[in-house]
Length: 83
Image (tube, rainbow, N blue to C red):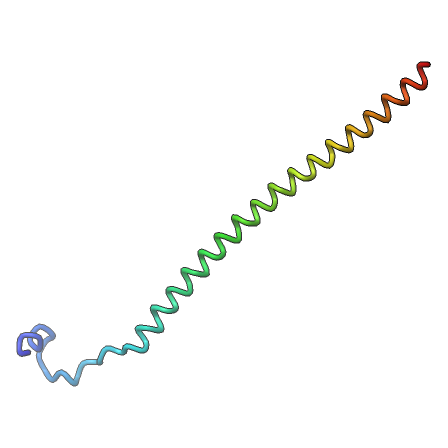
């Protein structure tokens, strides 16, 4: 006990601020909440990127189908006009 007092500079042990467990737990919980929030934001960005890619693929499929239908109509009109 005497060595701990000399390591701190001497004096009464009651002069030093006691360890506050409640504030330490609050700080840890805040850090955990911040890390969870960061992970959630990162995951939401990944989901948003995936949705954007899917949307592009869907539009390419829609335009491809529309172009095939229009090409079939044009081919039919050319066959009718050429006959």
